[in-house]
Structures are given as C-alpha cells and as structure tokens.
Image 1: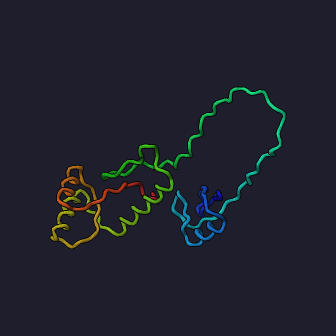
Image 2: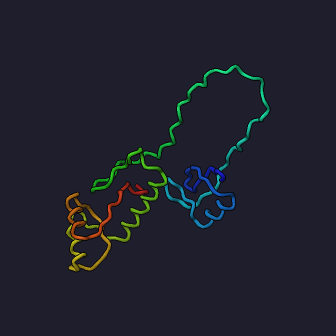
Image 3: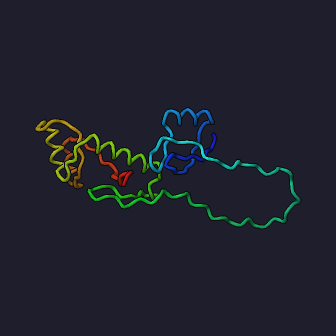
Length: 172
C-alpha cells in the first residue's frame, strides 16, 4: 500500500491509500478518486516529504525508565458543516462524532441526485406514497417529510420507503 497526499482543483488537500502508484493513476484517470470535501474528481498528487527511516545502528544504551504515556492523537475531524436544514432531516452527528468528510461528500451527492430525480411533496409524503402504492397517481420518485408514526404506518401497510440522512447541500 502507498500513502499519497492529494489535492483537488478547488484546492482542498486530503490523503489516500492506494495499492500502488499505477493503481492511483488508473483510479484518478477514471474519475474514481474524489475530494471528500467537495466531491471534485480532478485530483492530483500533492508534494510530499519523503518518509526517511532512521538508522538501525545501535546507540549507546540509555538508562531504562518507565515509558511516558503519550495521549493518543485524535483523528482529524471533518470540516464543520452548517446545521442540518429543517425538514425532518437527520442531524449532522453520528454516534462516534461528526460525519467523516468522505461520507458527507457522498451524502451531499446523494441529496443532489434525489432533488434532481424526484418530486418534493413536503409534509404530504405519507399521503402521496400511499396514493402511489394504491395506483391512484402515476408512480414516480418522491421525497418529503413524514412523522415516525406515519413511517411506521406505511411500513405496516407494506409500502416501502427509505429514510435518508439529509445533510446540507454541497454548494450551500
């Protein structure tokens, strides 16, 4: 495995691990390497300092003392995002902390695709989903808000719905 410091054309910097140099080049050329901050697929390797190992020569023995406990470094947090928009969305936090930047970028792309491909029906989601299920209106993709009770009632009636974490737009 090889570790690269990467940069998108926006320019955001981030790191990535690849099987080898050719693997990175192949994935980048196919547009499969993307910025976790903005989703940009124009990614290049950034300048990195080489990792140089210290000599393995044995130095004079040092008196042994109890090793000092080092606090573990916390992983870098995802960039802070504005609070989730109203409308029944999931908050910006998960059990372990903030949403990782790559996941946030993926959820933002998913939101953009849902908004582009589906009709927003607002608070009338449960009613509209029921009409589509019963064949009263033309079948189409919809999104909107539903209460917990409405979602449970739809599930009990055999109407498949999916809850999506609704994160702020990538451009907002």
